[in-house]
Structures are given as C-alpha cells and as structure tokens.
Image 1 (cartoon, rainbow, N blue to C red):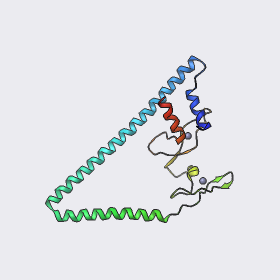
Image 2: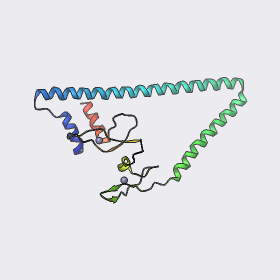
Image 3: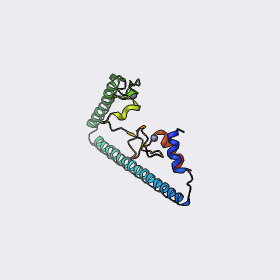
Image 4: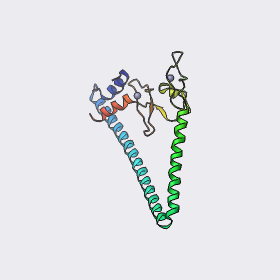
Length: 179
Ligand SMILES: [Zn+2]
Ligand SMILES: [Zn+2]
C-alpha cells in the first residue's frame, strides 16, 4: 500500500474519537457506498441494454439473410462474399496504419529534464504525462482524495466510470467495500 493511499483510506476507516464522529463517518461511508452501487448498477443496466440491442440487430440481420437466401440464393451469396471481403479490408487497413506509426518520445518534463518514456500511440505524452494533453478525453485524473483534501493525480484509463480510480485506489475501494 502506498503512503498516499493509506492516508485516504485510514481517514475513512480509522475509529473516531467520539460517538458523534462515529455516526457521522458511518453515515458518510454508507452514502459513499450507496452512490458507488448506484453507479455500478446504472453501468450494468447500460451494458445490458447495449447487449440486447446488439442481439436484436444480429437476429434481424440473420432473418433478413435467410429470407433473401430463399428468394435470391445467388445474389445473397454474392452479398455475403462482398460483406466478408469488406470486413477483411477494414481490419487490414487499420493494421497497416497502426504499424506505420512509430512511438515517439514523450514531450513532458521531469524536474526540468525531458521525459525519457515512449509516448502512447497517437499521442505526444507517456502514461505519466498524458494529462498534460488538454484535448485528450480518454484519460482522467484519479478521483480519490487524501485526508488533507488533495486529489490523487494518477492518470486513469477508465471511460466507463464517472468517478474513475487509479489501480491503487480501486484496490483500496474493493477492500473497503468487502470489509
Ligand atoms: Zn513522460
Ligand atoms: Zn488514485
């Protein structure tokens, strides 16, 4: 456990001095748990809806293909071949594009010196410095707060959560939830 993470969680879990503090910290823990589970539930609902939409799409597509095949077998065969080759072309194009781009050096600085890490694909910053790029929207700062109110500044790649946590803080949250 890192020192910073310890501070954050010990502020949540440490036994308080008076009964007043106890009830207060307990109710704040319960509220935090509630929001966490609400978010998790909403996220799962979204996933479920997307999945069932996709299922419906695939089902409709298969039905249409079957119908077409019974009426116009030759044309349908041609169409399937075209669809397949189009899918092949798409993947091969994206693969060559990816191969062409060599990772450049990170343009961030560490104590005045150029960072020596390789930049992430299609960016000019490494993972540690990616938040310096203000226009990117894939990474965000960890939303955990330390006991002194300062926010953790570790970049997180998590586009599914509204309150993303770094690996360290996510682990602590799991621990906190299952205690
Ligand atoms: Zn860097
Ligand atoms: Zn963090």
